[in-house]
Length: 239
Ligand code: PGA
Image 1: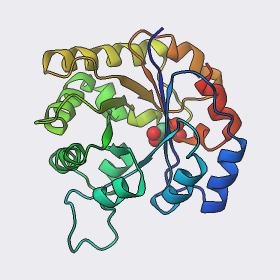
Image 2 (image 1 turned 30 degrees about the vertical axis):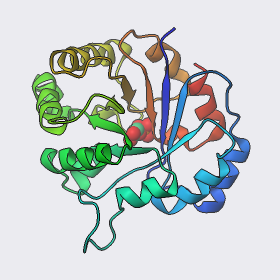
Image 3 (image 1 turned 180 degrees about the vertical axis):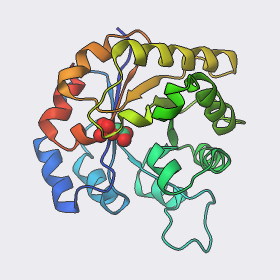
Image 4 (image 1 turned 135 degrees about the vertical axis):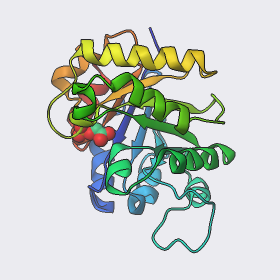
C-alpha cells in the first residue's frame, strides 16, 4: 500500500483552547501515514505542545519570503522552525488570490523553507474559468515551473487543489482529480521531481474520501473545513 499523507489546514479558525480541545479528542490512528496540521500561527505553540507525544507534525500556513526584516505582521520561517514546526504550506489559493502572492514570490518562500530544512506542501490549482476554457494543464504547468524552479525534490509534497472545489462543497470527481493529478506527476517526473507525493484538496469529507484515496495518483489529502472536527478528520484519515 502507498504511504499516505493527511494534512489539515485550519486556516484562520480555532483558538489556543480550541487547539488543545481538538487534540484531546483526535484519536491518532496507529499506522505509518504522515499526519500534518497547519494551525493558525498564533496557535502553533499550543499545537506543538498538545502533540508532543505523538507522530503528528505541525506546520505554518504562511512564511515570509525573506528570513527576517522590517515586515510587520509576517511569519518568519526560521522562527517557525525554532518553535518546532517541520512544515510550511506554500502557494495556497487563498494566499495567491487574497494576498496577491505571485509564483515568483512563492518560489522565493519555498527556497527559503528548503534552506532551513522545513518540509514544504506546495499548492497548485486552476480556477473554474480556467477549467472551463481548457487551460487546466497549462496553468498548472506554469505554476509548477515557476513555483518549483531551483528547488530540491526532497522534503517536498505537492497539493492539487482546484480553486473551484475549495470550501465550496463541490469536490472534483475522482476521475477529474485523477486526471489532473496524473498530469502533475508526469510534469514532476519530467522535471527532476520524481517521487514527490501529490495530495488532493478541495471539499474532501468522510463521504468522498474513500473513493478519492483509491485513485492511483492521489497520495493523500489537504483538508480544510472537514479537518476542524476531530471525528470527521479521523474518518478521512482512516478512509
Ligand atoms: P476545504 O479546503 O477542504 O474546506 O475545501 C481545502 C483547502 O483550502 O486546503
